[in-house]
Image 1 (cartoon, rainbow, N blue to C red):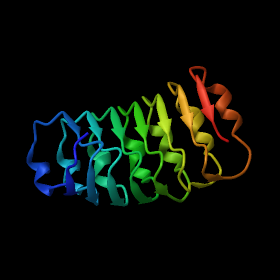
Image 2 (image 1 turned 45 degrees about the horizontal axis):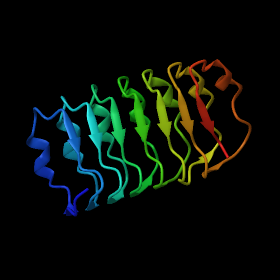
Image 3 (image 1 turned 90 degrees about the vertical axis):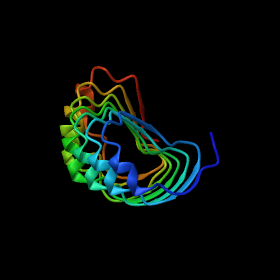
Image 4 (image 1 turned 120 degrees about the vertical axis):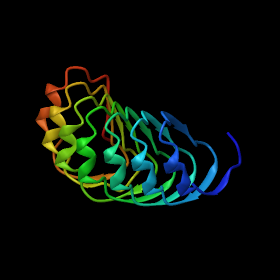
Length: 168
């Protein structure tokens, strides 16, 4: 809850021992630096409620120990990279209130630890991938206020841990 502004310095990628990075609730702008993808010990990355723009860097998928990724309430665009399916440790993916487009990738099935997926208030299109039924730990699925079409996949019925689903 500061008033930090301007771009996130690329030099942050030199902090190789960093495990937690909270830059949320500021006025940071510009793109998410690809250099964050070299912070291999990072397990918690929170940059919500800023003025970040551009697409999600594929390099974040290299963070094999990342469990929490909060990027909601920014101006991020583009699609969810297919490579994010390699984020096997990710438990929380919060990307609501951005301007993401495209279809949700079938590779999402690789996020085996995912418990909380909040992608509401974007412009995602197409059908919800049936592969979402492979996320057996999923508790919260929030995809309301998008441009999704089709029938909700019957595979949602396989997700016995679900506590809340918002598809309105």
